[in-house]
Image (cartoon, rainbow, N blue to C red):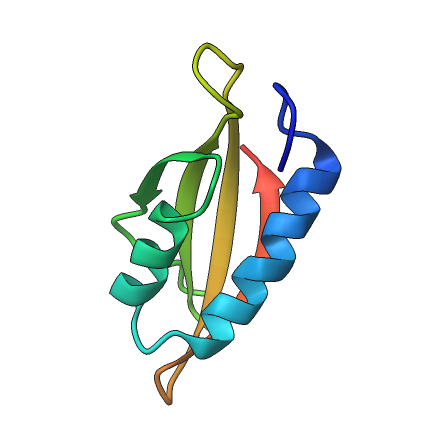
Length: 95
């Protein structure tokens, strides 16, 4: 991600990286730590409740910005929780 504003293409690129990281994660804690380490990610908050969908989902709220004083873009990352301790990206959307 480059520039002062987090663009749609920046979010799409991040979504592709999240999909790969979710598939490789051993736990939601590992995925959360990976999200926190990504460039441009200012803050990560995990929802307290798991959505009772099929499969269940866990949401993360990410604040994204490109440098000090830049506008913050907030996105929600939804992760499917499969029963065999595997994870899959469901969606990345604006809040």
